[in-house]
Image (tube, rainbow, N blue to C red):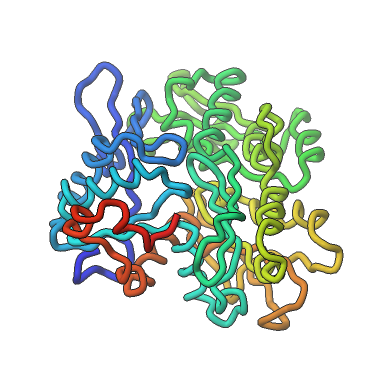
Length: 413
């Protein structure tokens, strides 16, 4: 962040490099957003399984963002960087080398995204007892995996962190396989399929009923989706029933039905694709049970949903339903925002979550499931909100040269 930084993050930029197959020209970071048609793109990402493993590619992306989007010089900026959970020491060292020695930022501090999101949530709702104690369970439904992260006093309780090896990438791959088998072959279109999934998927509140409805000739879940033609929407769009009957022969149309809700269902039942792991609700309860019993009440009362997959419609409501049989009978399960109306802009979804009024700021036995105001951007805003506290732990290039990773000890595991 520059010394005269704005109070809000400027943009969300794709962390990838894309090329049209057979061509040499590359679209780095924000250049990808300007493309009128994203079909036929081959995408390279520096991140694998939640960790940055290709720092040459990451540096290229950062240089593009710094020079063309933010238009700042690194030597004039302090960098607050969200850090993967259980960051490997060699990769943490590579991050420090890139930021401090190669790009020459003034200083660097790294923090887990769950911590940053909870700080943002606490700043917005300081009257909630759990937030005042810096306590909560953050669900980070990210691109590479989904984590349940308990925190107390704004510190991660690492013994309680649990991971499901399913994230947005795996869900997109499953979505791609299903529509390629049933409708149009899009196995070579990962970026396009991800956009289609974000626009059309939802979480079912009654899987058996929705599956039965999807089998009917007039399925309420049936959607026609036109693929991009090079003009207009770069990722295509959902067709209205009137448009679907008046298209020319040159249009390519996907027919989407039960895959719209069966793909997000994997987060609640990973065994459906042979992954021997618990679903999200069970993972949350296991994470909380691994923490000291005195914290359980506060952790259950403040379950914060973040990450791209949390933007999926009905995600919060379904998780609250799944938690009900897993928590003690004398806990009341509630879901909603904490005051007024929370508006979250998530990929193509713009969702309004109605408020859930609380009778007391410190209810004795309650399970509160809350969608972050902006599930994707709140970790960045949390970093800006908490910049004074975070920058007290910053590391400079001189300190890193002298002490190596020991200079980063204040950042924790």
